Image (cartoon, rainbow, N blue to C red; front, top):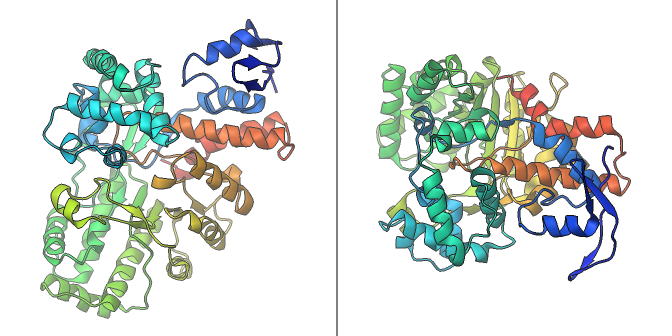
Length: 503
């Protein structure tokens, strides 16, 4: 490997070595180098513990563009090249990760989601940040300050006024518009999350305007499965029918409408679907049975648990067959218990920080559902995500059941998701991938974020992955072979997603 960097042990302020280090062609004493990198929390070797990790990240991972094939960015804000007024609005308008941390820290709800000013909310976040130390939010916060604003100060009550004022001035520059923020992070592709009833007018605008970054819709039909609130379900079915120009009164018309919208999404560049049920559904059903169940729902009548299982199995299977028919990749995010706090849900709505990890996902129904599709050779490329770390090994071995050699990792394991999207979770994820699958075929990171400042999460993942691989090399468990390591690191950083998704 090129350019050696020596490691040392540091105890307190004592340095038990004094060799020479070459960094980007500059000669440093080891002591001066350590003093230099210690000046900031976010530095050149953040997270990178070994020589090999340093070289893998800086020579290979850091140079690759970003493919962010699953996120929740606001497409309207991209199309209109929106500019935020201040960091309070930019960071806190919809970030339930931060909201949750602030509540745990004892911040009153009015200072989180209430009508107080953006600056007041920012100051409450700044007061919370020191208490997030060792939490991924502490890392993300300071990576974002460093990468977007070149600010390397630690955010705290004592620095908050200065940082707020400095970033407020910077945000007025065209360099900080949404499109330029995306360009700054070397993003090649963004996969938004969109309802079948959406008309995708802002995706159309981006195509018309010639924005060079591909902003592609993803088909997420979860609302078709939400049968517990029957009035809302009926309202949604009417909305779906309007978008498809079909009056939906039967189950066959529902599938026709969904297929019509699926075809429209395909014409807009979509090649990915997503689904976020709490678990997989599976029950034996006939189309006649499901047609009767759908009629009951449209009539405003509740259905039994068994009927819901049959209806959801049928609809999810039809959606999956559409994905296969058009050569898409489908994603399933399972394992969350959503909206646990009824009082807060009634006050703030969904996706506001009151979700949690669910019990272990039923593996039998997952197997039965995937087998239902595979039995007729209609199983599309599939990415499985789980929220409970207890399900890692089950998910990975489930993926292997339905890989048939037709493509690399036809059914594959997605990135560490949501509550697992942090250093320990990613390291366990990489361990499990290495043990039970092929790490070299991993499709890589997604932000799964609503924030335009979230792209350093790709850097975070790449540093953690390079550190993980570097440690394996240093232990002699992976060969110190440049061709192997380059292929591995560039694959999980970028190349695998590029070849897998075919956008």
